[in-house]
Image (cartoon, rainbow, N blue to C red; front, side, top):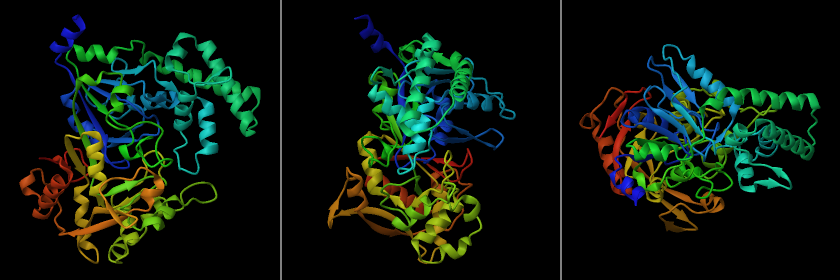
Length: 482
């Protein structure tokens, strides 16, 4: 009865912010913008494969991989939930990097808390990823193998899933198990490693663990207690819902659940505190790696181009090469593939972690509506609306929007449940009037071009969700609240 009464008197709540497309929608930018309204910024899934880029106070940029966004708000608690997987070396280096940001003086010692139930990315996970992750284009951060071991639990008498709390409880025992796991995988893949090399590898990992163990939270009710006392929590999703391990187009997905509901499993909080879901999309869509992408400029030709690598495994067409292309020539060619290349260069669509060229596509309203319905999105934010004026420079001078799907000749109003079916989808494209204005200095909805105002209203009607704001440029203040 006491617990029930505590819930009734509780003033805290939690909101969930997720990406609604294939990633890189600018989630961290929105988190950074609204973080002042919350007490805790929390991560509930993913690991060092998630690259969130936010601006520093002096206009610089910092890429976050495992630390939650909201770092520039000194009073905010940053929480990494049990649904995440942690690379202790990369985490230690990331914390060190944040300490040394010019003019920022970011001290995480009393702010960052990491669930003791979060799984540890071990050396053998990195080895497995390097050996097996080529086909689906993983970031080779060991994320998939770590989540796989979380499900497998044991291999014979070897413990596969080791948590941060295990390393706190008995580092000697569990680092020994980490060594055993690495040796077993070396044997499986025929990787030669001397005893000294293995010992140095594990000792290095232990050294980095000692640098981050102060941040590990042993209280499994840490977040629950904070919210009971009135704390307001913002969960930020890593990756995006179209890459969800269950709902996405397997195998071209991430290794964790990215949907709204996953926030309360991996974020260590009761769903009874949920208030609303904020969805983030971008007007120029992109995708890293292989997989279905119905609105892609250039279709499978673009996919092959973006995934092409040279003999050393690096991209054949990195940003340095594409930056030399004649943008105006590409835009005026009338070829959607060329338009996609031009948009990628102009909007810097290259992977934050992987540095791979992102595949670029037109705004897909069918996919967006699906994502909104599946996640109960209450508010929609759309970034990169400033890039829509680029279409005025194309041969047709109109804005292409996907507003229908056909599968096997029949209209469908959903995203297919398999990769093969989604690859077979034919997108219906409608063409909207395009504005030429530079909107980067606009801060009020009424000042936006009439064409963009009309498009925003059409999107709201099509998707059944209120648009709460649009990005009009990459800078922190280049945003219009609606």
